[in-house]
Length: 374
Figure 1 (cartoon, one colour):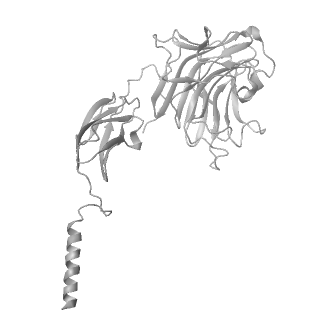
Figure 2 (cartoon, rainbow, N blue to C red; figure 1 turned 135 degrees about the vertical axis):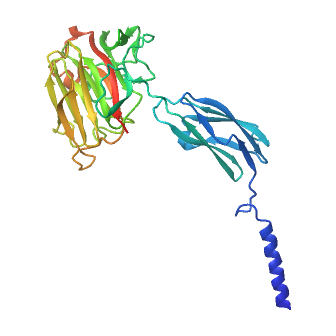
Figure 3 (spheres, rainbow, N blue to C red; figure 1 turned 45 degrees about the vertical axis):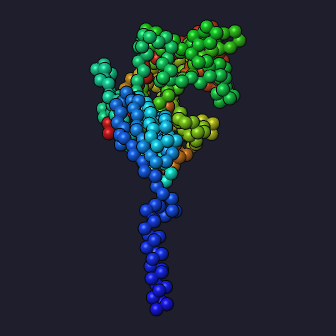
């Protein structure tokens, strides 16, 4: 009988505990939260909308990691039982749709509200633009926006100053952000960009500018007319973005030329195994008789297997991935494009400089980026 009574008592206790455990394993009661609407959809242009929240406890809301750069949340009434979340979805400037989530949290309750946004529609390609076979145009600057007299800073950013050790090359110029003290070194007019190296007092002002967008693999081209004069050193090239280290991070020089050796244009790559400073180099050049008087198209096709360099559509150098590792092939991360006009330096000033060549103008008709169709 005593055994039976003990058994009955234990059974009653178990039933009591079971009936009170509608909460989680820790014993905390999960608040009831309702959200309306249960998802957010936006066009590529972006949207500002509101979520209505009811909860029996204090709550909060925030963007998930996947969309925190383009979705923001502003809560109101979160310390009460009813409130709202103002959701702002920024415009999507890419040609790819994107997804994320808004998280509404109260106590141990966590609700995910899906967020989706359309891709920006692809703009019709100008029929005059020759698109490489198998590729599509993904980025361009034609420098023909008549409302701008300097480069579009939503597309480009400047690097300024003398750099460390003259940007690693003992260059003489002082790079400026478009203009300084009334001196303009980045001029957009008549459908082209002019990068102008100018003597100002004891200094030479010039321009070094990078695309704000970066890419892994693609077909990169620019139509360029090179400056004249001993001391000039124009370039159209690429570095990792974000930058890591040199030379191990890699460098892709689509076009370089120095004024003391006019019309000889070079294309090279730099990496841990081949970087010039170790006595080993990978690159080649072409003689373009009118490089300083006419426009020519300089391009690089970069794939996971090779980088091909072309002038006016003709390949003049190819570097192949030997599959031995990053010392010879660090070209598997995103790079951005760079345009600059250096003055002097280890290569540009190797045979001296002639200041009578200043001002010197490096003219860019367009820069275009293509990537393979998926």
